[in-house]
Length: 236
Image 1 (tube, rainbow, N blue to C red):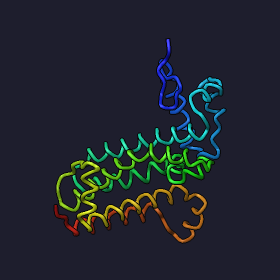
Image 2 (cartoon, one colour):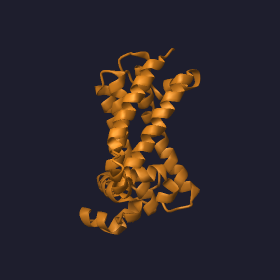
Image 3 (tube, helix red, strand yellow):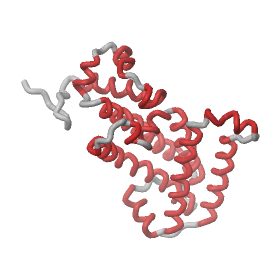
Image 4 (cartoon, one colour):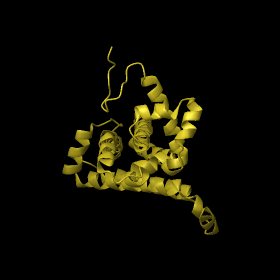
């Protein structure tokens, strides 16, 4: 009997459990170590499988790394949506998104590095590889931006948080300049702060010398953003 195959032509029937375990374990190693220090041999030892089995499922190390990164990012986007659904006010929703972005990046710096710097992280100049990776991430990124946009809109309008579709958020961005400004400010600022804090260890001694606390600064920035967005108002 011929087994079913996935998009890469590799057999999948009766084998998804093994493939999923490889991806999940690689994602955990990748989150902690990053793409440069990741050792597939360590993944195989932990799973008690042969490296040839990894080669069976994935055409290259880069393919496994991006698959693991997408797996990890999928979990993050779902966690952001769950946090939004628990929020009772726009302020709670916005703060949850920013803090969720920072904490996830701090705890998963290796995956964040692959997402933000794919060409460097995948160690490949093959455009097909990075284009496929970007395609895999595009839907997830739209969902994450929709969660952020929903939080900003709830805060601007003073309404209870309601999740908006990515299409609705896109329309609001085009029609409402104030909304577009705040979603980009919070989005770029939040992700930038996340990457900065995640890589802060080399600068810790310097910050201590000047009495600077990144976490206190983030707290103050979030409070200021909430106040300013609340005061800006919104319109349909």
